[in-house]
Image (cartoon, rainbow, N blue to C red; front, side, top):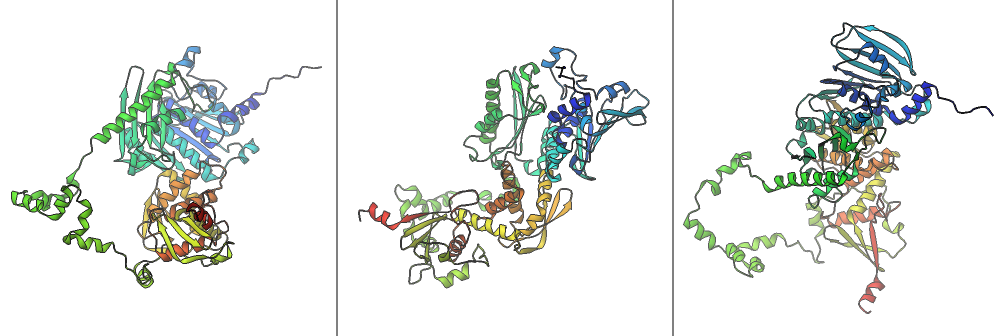
Length: 621
């Protein structure tokens, strides 16, 4: 038998390595940006075309490379960062393994231009499928420009597995944000298809956070700063009111390297315990600096997962640092009366509280009611307060319920009847229900009686199911009517949200949202569905986006399905909202006109039934 084990050719070995390092365009972006940072650049520009599939180019003003270094940089495991085995345990640079450029050259067509400050000319190298096609001098400024074109042109199967352009661009923006957040002193810019997405001037960490995540965070950041002999932690966390339903705005950096760590995230969540809702996630951008010998970053191809020598110490330190920062924020609330100068002119502020005023206040029945023991329940008997009770007395008809004619004059229903409505009795096999008199409990549940017992309907869950099926019909050929805004509303979004909205524009239009790009990360809201209250258009879209990102973590849903569920949740009438008889009746009828009236799109029950004979048994009848 002949020998069968052979060494792989370099180009095949590089392609196999590329499968680990360069999984998508965003992977190449990460490696190239980190190389530019390591080169000592103060300005880094990222240019992408066709979501990185056609072009990814990074231009920096770093120290550049000599002719020999430029050529050697594309060899496998060629690096300037590692000299001996000890260096592996004291890594302070972003890159160190020498795999990135070799992997990039194996799956794309690369053009590298680089020049050192002391050299007269730079070097230009063109590489195609790991083979050097051209190397020649070139006139250029100090620094490096590397462009990779036609990613995966020689690996069609890998190219076919790439997602849509908006999806791939989202991943690129993610990587760009992670690197630019870690180095606020460096200027960064991102241009996609000729349009600038980010222009981040150098500045402080807080300025960089606001530049990336939006001005809404400007006054809602709490500084975290703790130092010890073992490690330092610094950065910012968002105040509790900024907590969202998604994990999006959460960044951990160890020695300026972005990492993913469920363990440390749990530490931060523990610091926010009982300050935010259980299903909410706080915003944080935290930097941990410690001796490189205490961590191992060479445990994952993307270097986004690391090992700590003592995880428990780091966990405890992070939790206590964030808790301390939040405590300082909580114990020093301030009232700034300068915010409203009119307060300074009120009588209560400008006029003295004389003895005459004191005795007048103390003699009032309201004062006595609340200062004498066991008197609070007599408040309604005081003659001067009787008019308050009248406000809470419902207008009664002969039957004891709200007079229908008065009701119709006061309130318009908040739920639109579907033109394709089918009667309730067609959809349920149990005895006919009485929809004439409906009861609302706790402004959340609707009680519907029938001959066999009664049903309790959760109004938000029911409305979610109704809206969800309405959206399905809209996409299938019954578009929802758009209510045009008299004065168009301008809405500014973060760059990440701009990518999402751009991708969703066609579906949003079918569902009644008319948005138009207005440049510079802004959209103009020209119209919304009739269900959306005037003045609430911007908030409705922002909440829908937040919920959409929440669903995006679940891979089993399509983009359209995520949008339907997000809008249904956002537009549904929430628990705690008082409904009129007419509104409750339409809600119940529309629920049982649905194809699946018993559950929400997320699988929660919309109603539960109670049998009359079960009630009889409870009372011994």
